[in-house]
Amino acid sequence: MEFHRKKNSQGRAKWHALMTIIAVLILVNTGCGIEFGQTGGKSWEKHITEENIQLDGLEGEYTLLFLTDTHVVVRDSKASGQEAENQDSRYPMFVNEEGISAEEQFPEWVRYANEKKVDAVLLGGDIIDSPSEANLQWLEEQLKALDMPYLYINGNHDWTYPWEYMTQAGRETYLPLLEPFMQGNTAFQRLDLGGLVILGIDDSTNQVEAQALAGYEEALTEERPVIVMVHVPFMTQSALSRALETWNSPVVIGAGNFGGIYPNEESERFMSLTTAANSPVELVLAGHVHFYDRDVIEGERNVPQVVGSAGYQGNAVLIHITGTEN
Picture 1 (cartoon, rainbow, N blue to C red):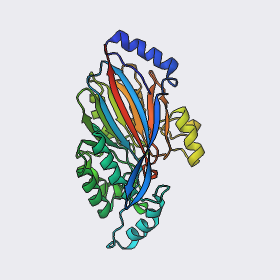
Picture 2: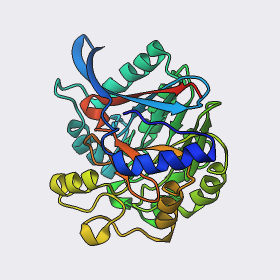
Picture 3: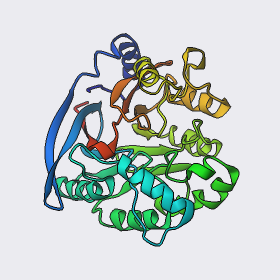
Picture 4: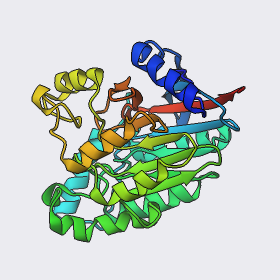
């Protein structure tokens, strides 16, 4: 995927017009490679999709590792009752083709990120499958092993249990447990890489959290390109049709009359800001649907959206961002 952005107003106008015409065609510079990991003496395939982004006037180069939907379940021998039943039933669901569990795979991704010396690791939600004590302790240990900064957003599983799914009690009890991994704010996070800003937005409830909008609006006024990470994808033609086929359910935000999720006022505002004519957003990253997809979110300007496939299946996206001469 290659695309360009000018900092001056004349170049910006030309860019927006060009994006409207050939938005889909420019999303072609994508590679897919296979590397092998070793876990417990077993070899397994890492499926790495590479995206190349070129931005006019960008200072520096950046490589980002995007990982989503690993659904790690750490078995805890001390767990009892509902929690024990939940971990026993969910653990076998999240293994790759070689039978390696998500819990066992994840340290290999940490090693990979450190070895590649990526500039940041982006964790797109559902990294853990529930906020159990064992999962949270494991998560803390894994993130401490990273040699670079990370940005972590909520998925719909990170802070919920099946018996407290999206309830107010669950929000009050479990959501705060994720704050230490999310800059103390589960609704909105920010990672400043110098010439590039990455923003995390919580839409794990299938709508954008209202608390995220103030920080989002302020960040978009800066004269730097922005990458946005959400968990639930926003409507694109491709994502909507594939999600309906895969899940037979509205699992993308937007186009409710065509089978997607009807956006509320906050989600409408988010989409409007993201696709505004003067928006600095160059890319939206999402997960949730467990398949890889790339298309554009349509608006005053078309913004590319890359949806990462399920991490527990051994998938990740490596994003290379470079500048061009003015």
